[in-house]
Length: 229
Image (cartoon, rainbow, N blue to C red; front, side, top):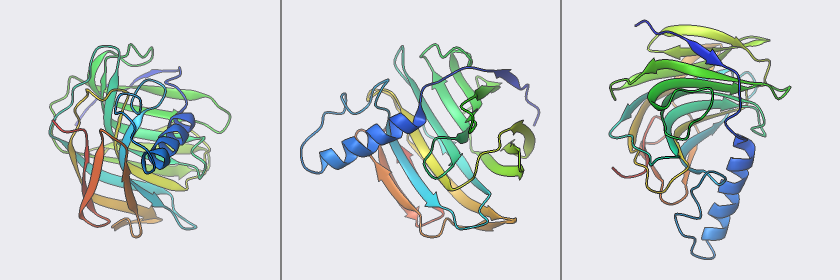
């Protein structure tokens, strides 16, 4: 597969803030009802994810991502992707599908395969890899290539970007800014990298806040996640 890497520097917002808001909403929803609309917007993103906490030596993660649907209202976005981050999620890299109807400056509008990252210094990078892709199963992989770079792979086509982040957590799932988006997806073949690739995110958990869902089909290696089609 060949793709044209279109890189633009910019900002998509603070994933750490969005995730902290997600956690707060998730905790609050166990004690009181929270509307889907208030829990899923441009400030408080909603997530349906599997999350793996790496042990010492953990450097990468991979998954096959097979979307059933991908739609988002005007002014919003929805993703189906994988992430790597440091332990407090202040630095990260990600790759996958996005429906960008939010006029994000460094991505084209519309459906695309994209990549993104934030470095420990706070600089960000990202871009479009495939524009208007067919929604088919694609294998996305991320790993620490060197002490100062991260590798991104889509179906075996790989490139690197400068990023000296520590790798502590892997996630696979869907992120949205709208309760009216759709994104239900099969994530399978979850792998982790400790020098070499091995199967299964041992000990990983799943979590979701409405209207997202996330459930294992095979614990540690396959799940359904997203907003219903």
